[in-house]
Length: 153
Image (cartoon, rainbow, N blue to C red; front, side, top):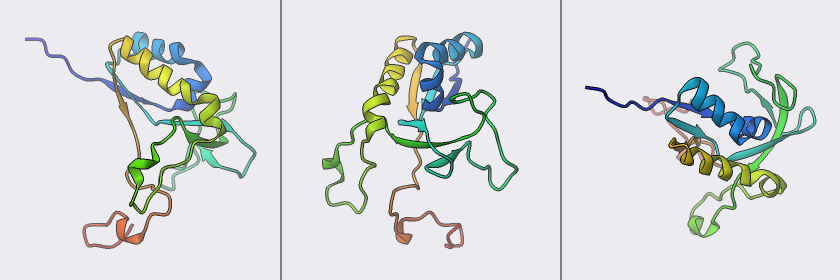
């Protein structure tokens, strides 16, 4: 009896911005045969050295990493980012945390993430968001993750 299994790949929106919605989806479906895709609802743009965050990030103190496919023609670079959507701030009323605010990148490129999601669903793919549960801006020590002994990493 044949069973269907989920086969998913995470894609950074950076690559969608660089290679295009259809280019990324063609690679995922035709070459890799995925049935699902996960992405972070963040858009980025190259920025000057030392500003924003360095990509790809270090891997637990290992040697420097590089991308196997260039972003903006580079295998590593500094980027700035913004959410791909306009957050509904009413959902954060009476909470200690607020969402990242939309910025110029949201306005310029945010729709690309939505376009990608629509196109992926049109191709029959399952779509998931990959978000960090421990990176809220201004996180208090009370809310930080704990090690089994109660200490903080």
